[in-house]
Every structure is written in structure tokens, then in C-alpha cells.
Image (tube, rainbow, N blue to C red; front, side, top):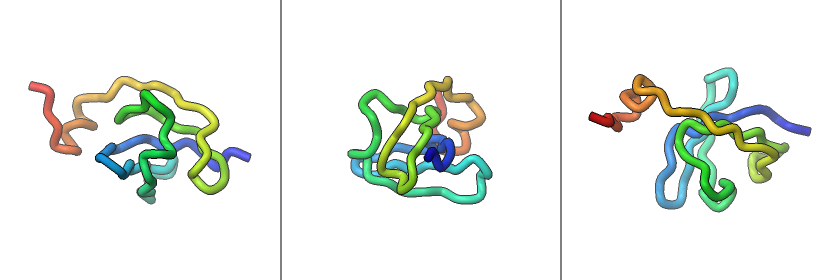
Length: 74
């Protein structure tokens, strides 16, 4: 059972921050649970406990999204 899609907001050395579909909660997970090649802006379809990724949907990262994170691509 898929618990929902989560947007990857930020990836650090050992942590990744994911936002749920309702945009009311941010989840912190260890990067070992991310499939190889995931990057900020991708969506993950997750199973139950957030530790099993069912699917990765690649998305282009929007400029306004990057500006929220303070990562400008000037």
C-alpha cells in the first residue's frame, strides 16, 4: 500500500527532507533510503514507513522552489 507521494525538498550528507502531498508536514529520513540518482525536486511514491520507495518521478526544479531553499542558479 502506497502511503503517498513526497517531494524531495533538500538533500544533505546523511539526511533528506520530504514534503507530503498535503504540504502540511516535512519528514526527515536517512539518505540510505533514497534510490541512487534522486535529486531535489523529484517525487517519491513511498510504502508504509517511508523506508521503502516504490517509484521515483523525476521533476525539473523550479526557480521559485530553489529560491525558497536559498539556492539561486544565477
